[in-house]
Length: 112
Length: 122
Image (tube, rainbow over all chains, first blue to last red; front, top):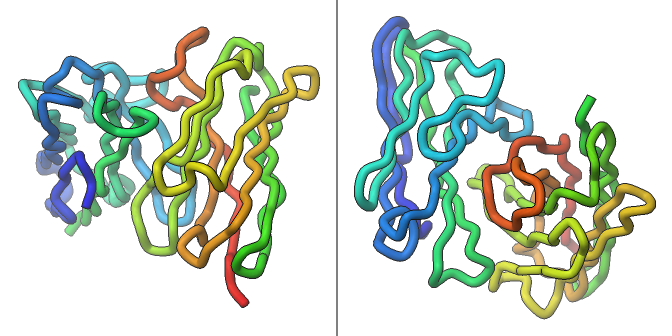
């Protein structure tokens, strides 16, 4: 069981908006550590999608956005497209975890 | 082009050893920490280890502490993951990933390699 909790799956129709939550605690997200998000398309390596809670690397469409509040963070995807179907992972750091680096369990996004 | 290429994966018996390599190009290698992250078949991402750009600081997940070691040769732009006393539960694709910010140990991972498969089985 991951210290950062994500829903196992979410789904949405093309054009819709979906959100993926990442719930932590006071020793990680709530402790001020940044949250980062990754997209993993089937059979490929993860790709950085959002860094520092709400920043997009160059080349990531502005349909993707991140936010953080208290002990949780969220990834929002608007204008859902078929190519967005993938696994999404949040990542942060934890003062109580050996090595300090942790990932959420991942969320499978299905585009209906 | 910034790139990471892993190698060294394969089939190994339980209790055996394997050394993975991560060759980097396209950036000032010694300025950036490098992480290893693994993914068991059908499972999520699991952070394994990190080494600072200088090699002076290293951290490990509890699941591999005492069995895995990490090192780097900045003259060869390469990071190594030495895996000893391998177990079936170490079976996974192993990715190396570059830290997004220089001279830091913890941050986002902005560049990932393609991964190398490690299978621990008799």
